[in-house]
Length: 224
Image (cartoon, rainbow, N blue to C red; front, side):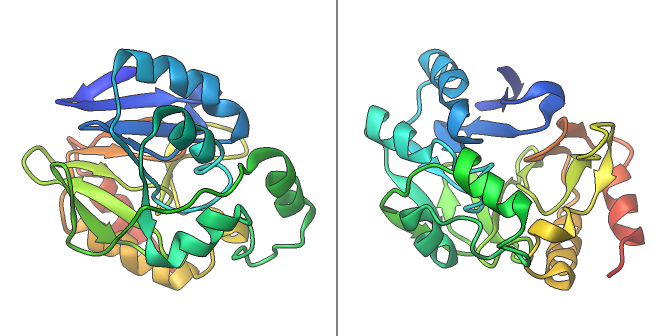
């Protein structure tokens, strides 16, 4: 676990930051895959949490949410369009090819059990010091979290900071096979770029210090 800003911690759950989660002002954002529990548990012993939020209910983001919430008695938060998948645990159902071998593998081995959502989040809500931003496209109820005072952005899978095949760092759109609406995702990405974030935290790939506006330059070039 690494502190990246005031009350913001990055927890790499797989080698080379291929799957990440974060603690933002006592809120655990995402939970990796089913086997990520021990790593998250170790971090929670160092930095306590009082609630758990999902950027979206995909198997590499809700994998041990049920365990986290049960073991630590914390509420679970997500967007209303993610509630059914979050509560049933059927988290690959919105994939464009939800019957593919990859989807079946992730559902069987990565996804965790469903868990009841305590509260839904919408555009403009506040989660501690972070503003909730609806960023649909990768999933219908995808949300991001932005703290204006220092420019910290938790953007989930609206973009990645690694090639998921080679694991080489770099800015990419999320894979189409996991993205429900590519055009809508790009529109969400363009809205996030208008915030001019200074520290960008991805579901996949290393944290980006956006000192040279590389994020905005990347977004300017993306197209459907």
